[in-house]
Image (cartoon, rainbow, N blue to C red; front, side):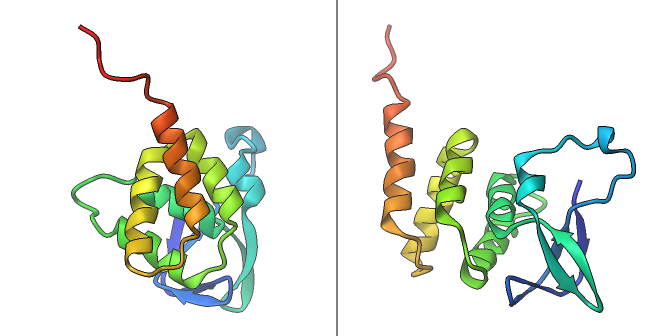
Length: 138
């Protein structure tokens, strides 16, 4: 699980929360995932911490659907507005899980002038439309 720490900086931009990758003494408890490999080392206060990359944080926030935490999409928009995004990485990760949710979030972000590249939306939309096999039978 992730740990949240008050106000911090990610990619040189101040955000409401910093999401830290937990430290695990026994590496067998935490498999080496793509998200962990993509984590960044960022200054937090007077020290450094391994921080979830902005792209992975956007994916996590886009996937959150609980009514008790409706602010996740707006957190994702803060990240999109305030951190440099590796759009290729984000599109690739979204295409493997949560493509519809990410397409919705990024379309919403673009409609609010957040600077989402049109090719990212086109790529995700193509995956959504190509994954359907036509109208239901029967």
